[in-house]
Image 1 (cartoon, rainbow, N blue to C red):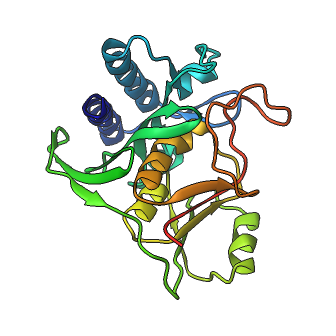
Image 2: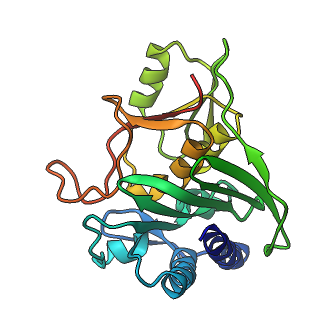
Length: 258
């Protein structure tokens, strides 16, 4: 299954780069979030791969969900897809944008692929194994290397969102004595934790499940965790929420090994 997800992400990433190279026209959805032709082209490619290989597994994809097209996932395994995470980075000509595909089972991300096409880097995870590959020529996936979270030392390095940072996040870091942080876009923050290049990523601003699932899968497989502010693992497949829309995440903290 992971091979299919990797091929889908790489092909979608190639379509994203094609739009990136010529410049994207930005439109805005009802929730005021940006969308481009790259988002839509990449999602079509991913859906074709997933529906062709796994017709019995429903897919919740960002652009389809924004149009009200959400399959029945009650009690079932399902895919979460963000065809272009970090659209603001993409539009701003920053390289921190990714293609994200994850499998959710019993509320947890158990497989995931995060592809950064402008960087030529592919992260993938299944169960307790996370890996990183270099993609050359936008199509050829190199031999993967296993990655893992580092043990937290005296100097804690935090990550914060480049485009969606918040005063609450900065206050959280200060409260926990963390003064050293780097701003990174998209789901790459989870992957940098998984690779052992940072220690903690607090997110005290809005995210949706498709923003986080694939990166969270990589992080969990690498020995890290993502927990809500009450200390429980971040759960996926949230519907009919009292205080928010379907698939919206609460605030959370992702971290490597303690």
